[in-house]
Length: 161
View 1 (tube, rainbow, N blue to C red):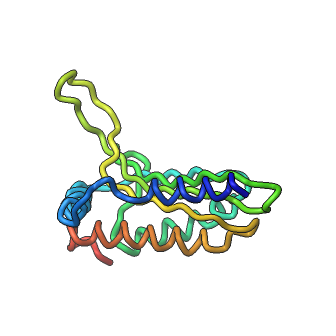
View 2 (cartoon, helix red, strand yellow):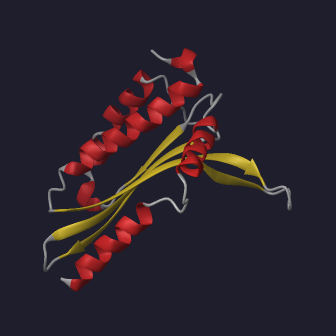
View 3 (tube, rainbow, N blue to C red):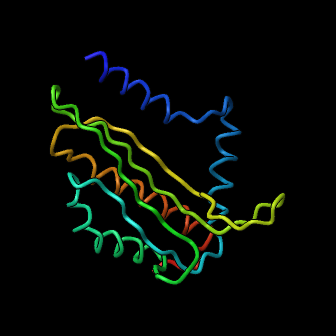
C-alpha cells in the first residue's frame, strides 16, 4: 500500500510545473503554442503498452479528430506528434499507474554545436491510477488531443475545417 501511495505522490508531483508564478506558467504555454505556428504537417506515432492496444484500433479516430481540427497529417514532414502511454501494473492492488504523454517534436539546431536534433516543442502530460479496464484513459487522451488542436488552431486560424 505504501508503494502505491508513494507512486501516486510522485506522479502528482511530476505533473506540477516547476514555475512559482502564474505569469511564468502562462508564458511557458504561450511559447509552446507559438512553436506550432506554420507547421505544414505532422507525422503521427502512437506508442502504447500491450494492455492498452485498443488505442491502436482507435488510431483512425485519432487521425480523423486531428484532421477535422485542421491538423494535416503526413508521413514525410519532419515534425512528429507522439502519443505515448507508459503503464505499471500492481497485481496486489489490481491497479495501473499510467503516464500519458502527447508531444510535438520538431527539428532544431543546437547553436553551440550546430548539430540538428528533434526537440520537444509542445507537450501535455497526465498521470492516473485506474483499474484493469482503465476507462478514463480514452477520455483523457481525447481531452489532450483537443488541447493540442485548440493551440494549433489559435496560431494557425485558417486551417480549421
